[in-house]
Length: 114
Length: 114
Image (cartoon, rainbow over all chains, first blue to last red):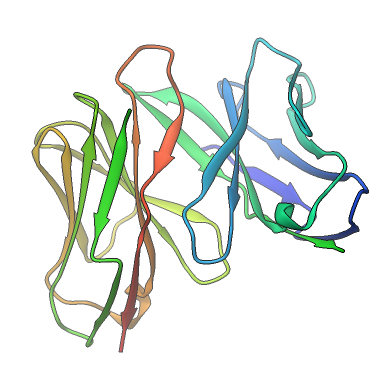
């Protein structure tokens, strides 16, 4: 089955600096890669996603890159703000018998220091 | 727009007691539905998914079960809870439209088994 590894597990940055979270996946059939942000005690929220036919996608201060050959994808947050502090999960997804099977990484706790 | 509800929001149950968690989705038809569990400080584990009424697939063998009595209703149950069943239970939905892969989570139920 799919295996998604996520690094680092914790990340502290100064406000205004950039943060990068990296993930690798194992199943070449995975074709969709979402990123979720989870604040303490809340539900995971989809913040950005990328499909396997795209190499990069950007939405304001966040961007995601995908290297299909190396099976790597990354989340980049620029000009970090205290409200970016949360746990971020990457995931790899593929079609499996009529539904999208999603495998999540183990999460990165991001702390933005004011 | 689509909305997903879960109840109860929090639950404290003794070991050996039964469990019933409910999830409903509004604003869409024939969604794919999912139950995930998140242990404290951990990632997301897929428990069950459903592509239609009465169609349930289990990802992990356990003492939990799921049912989908109506198109937009998904229920998670147990006859006898274990201490290890404690966690944050999240229901999620994704659209039935081919090519739409996004999963959206409900607000979750925090279960403590004592």
